[in-house]
Length: 135
Length: 52
Image (cartoon, rainbow over the protein chains, first blue to last red):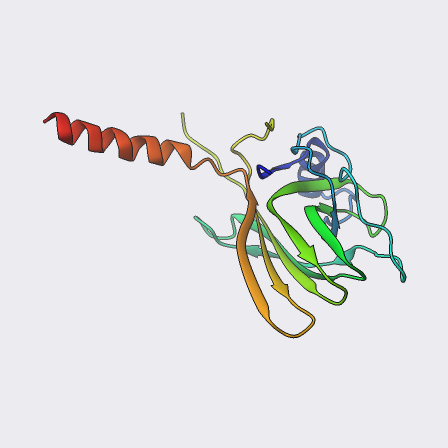
């Protein structure tokens, strides 16, 4: 399963909206799922978001910070931990602006499926580095 | 195949904590950072040295 990830087209709108101070929510809600179709920038949802189980699975609000990859504060980092409510195999994850629905900011299809049992947890770290080249 | 572009650069990392407390660091599980170009450059350097 080849990995793929990107800031979505909706995510681009979130970035520019935040820059001009409009009311778009912060994209720090982490969801996961079982889709394996490669990421497209036109994605607006995870392919097959996990919402099942009992209690029903819910997105987790991660912690967002500015971090440094190449130059000071050039990276948006979101860290959050999701705990499995059953036996499942996770193949995709994403960042949203809300606990339900919301706008998809980043989607990633994982290079390797993550097999989980109940009460296993996964800490995801999303890094989005803003870069610019001089041509 | 993906239509991901090189900018912004996205990496997703994952660390599993099993119910028994054991930890598995999976490292980067998805990225759109293109590593092909440095590899090609390295191969080209090696080939050039061999030709000399």
